[in-house]
Length: 373
Image (cartoon, rainbow, N blue to C red; front, side, top):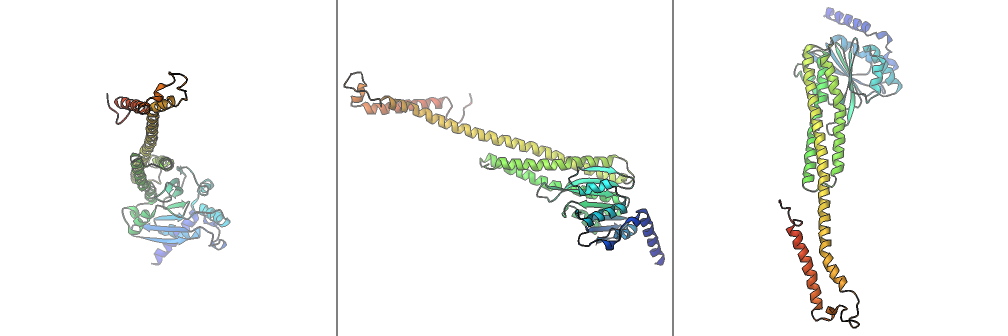
């Protein structure tokens, strides 16, 4: 027992020397109310431990004892303590200052950067599964650790945590590179439920258009296209980052993990295929909507034109016989006005001309269903 404790102590001292801990500030100088919280999950094939840590120096124990340590850091603010925290964390894991800037300055494009002792990965994950809003997830993977920095307090990594807690799959028997794959895979797979909801929205919009009840169709389609483009903007560079991970040779990524990353790459490709298809469908629905609106407008104009045409003959007859010619001055001044059947004749002429035009329009196919010649 004493021998095991001494070995653990020596390993802790060696890790302290490797990570250059003398440059780290003492934990008593930081405020616990403003220092970001680190959620640590350290595990091996035979067990795991989960704990919240505030002081970066407290990570040494986990790094020395466990084969794989996952440190998930809550959103980092811009206060003085947060800045000091990031500096200490950077010294502990030998992170470059440019990497730390990319963590704090969010909205970075998904990318992969390789360094001597770790790999820096930036990806975009959904804030929730009901909207296309995404947040930046920054990952660092070394031989025995994975660092993850979230932009917000929510994430889609609970399935990964459950696998570690319940030892599902092979995650606890693999190294840190497999944990990196599991996190990226969870991020990519979180887009599929949202894509299913987008497909349902497309179906609903199509039904509204076909049922002629699309009052807000343009707004819905434009909002849908915005969500689709937002997903494409997030997943497209993520696909390239995953491709770089499994294609480039790096000692931190094993050949077995590369196979899993290739499967993850295929998932990203499927998402992009769905996104492109949905974008085309949304464009087609918008064109269908405008076509139906144009057809309905043409039908309205057609009806109004027919009504106007039918009233032209009665208007002509009424205006003709409404002229105030004095029949006493000349026998040619509209003698039918003094005729006994003059008024019935005017009504007959109005009805006859209107009926004739109506029959003409019907036999020419302007009324009723269009007949094929």
